[in-house]
Amino acid sequence: MADFEHVFDAPPEGAAADWTIGQDWASYTPVEHQTWDTLYARQMQILPGRASDAFLNGLKALDLNAGGIPDFEVINPKLKALTGWTVVCVPGLVPDAVFFDHLANRRFPSGQFIRKPDQLDYLQEPDIFHDVFGHVPMLTDPDFADYMEAYGKGGQRAAGLGVLPQLARLYWYTVEFGLMESPDGLRIYGAGIVSSATESVFALDDPSPNRIGFDLERVMRTLYRIDDFQQVYFIIPSIEALKAETLRDFGPIYERLQGASDIPVEAVLAGDDVRTRGTQTYAARGGRFAA
Ligand SMILES: [Fe+2]
Image 1 (cartoon, helix red, strand yellow):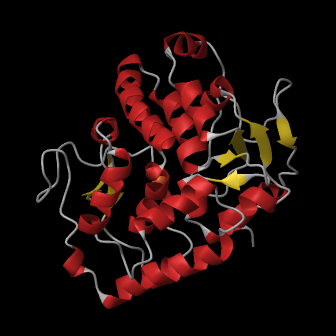
Image 2 (spheres, rainbow, N blue to C red):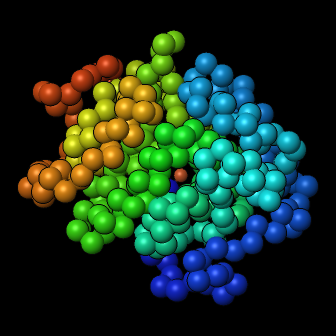
């Protein structure tokens, strides 16, 4: 996820200077491999017809269902040959600067652990299922691969300009919770959605959330929630369009954003390209915390 908190100032013991650790694939237990298989099978019941072609093609290209948790030594050569990206393990949360440096160099940081069998639906920290199943297939798409590298470089710049919260919203509403158009209707590509059985359905089908056409400055001004389903999703026309939109100089945008107010999660503005005007019923009832 984009908004890592600073938990440590220096790499913890056992981690390299860039905060990476070994995956130690041989250390995963049969129960942990089974958890991957269970989550994978469950998502594949839901995702055909919902996930973008880029995501589904990436899953196939990397063969992430070879049996249990993927071994990075097996998937990295395939991923590297396709787009130059690799996956590296990190010990949980890493500082923003470390995160951006990895992305800028086409390395995607992944958690090493997998959730426990009694936490299949909700966990606070991204695990290897969220990070590898959710994020890595999209990195096989050449345009998305470019976008993610550009995001890492943009993060390094934004940090120096004091606009990280605004840039993090772009990551949130695209890489984590993005929707895109397709000839057959809306599709999901955000890792936070495709790795969640419940949000995979909610994001496309539920009448509660707003669904709004992507607008870069609008997205950068919009707050988000980290504890429940999103109250607004933004729709990109295509990955190529997202890349084109974000490969320009953000300097003038950041200047305009300095004086702009934040937009609440449930807001619909006069200039919005509204595809669904949500009822917001789910959030009004208390969301996941409803009795
Ligand atoms: Fe994520």
